[in-house]
Image (cartoon, rainbow, N blue to C red):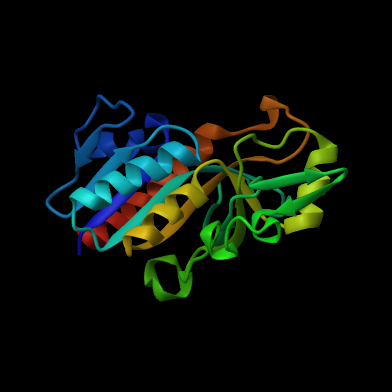
Amino acid sequence: MKLLIVVSTPMEIAPTLKHHGIKNTDEGNLFKLGNNITVVISGVGMTAAAYWTGKILEQDDCDLAINAGIAGSFDMDIPLGEVVAVKSDIIADLGAQNGDGFIPMNELGFAKESEYTFKIKTYEWPELKSLRVVKAVSVNTVSGQQRDIERLQRRLNPDIESMEGAGFHLACQNSGVASYQLRAISNYVEERDRDNWDISLAVQRLNVELQRIIAQYR
């Protein structure tokens, strides 16, 4: 089986690349971990993730694509550093503001819900059985004001938030390639305070899981 791993920043994959003897990383670069595994560093955001994922899937005959990275959690019961598997994702801010409300794109009549909402069959992948399964949202601006956080929670009831997941899944869906998403919790979604974040722990735990999964596909 041929595997594609998509990450947004060099930092999030550096321990795994270093483990395989790769030290210099840049956005848009491709790295081969043996004959069956390709890593691409896409850059931050859904647009970059969709572009690079789609480009690689057009060029390479992959059987499975994995999006891996850090994320913020709305659920305070998920410990910082825990790695979770995403069961659903949505482009959360695709729509129109309507006073204090929000109108999603399908209700505006400009898109089908399936074009920006994605269901991931995590139960089909044995390597994910040990991980907590969560509901994700993807945003262009990370949440950092309490009013906006509460509105997003009321509307979509998410467990975690990232900036790439839905764009990645869109590219995989359009390419007909199976996909899933791993996220390590680096912070809680609250009034922005970087002092409460633990990115280093999240990156460490994420790469432990990645290396465990990679070992099954080499």
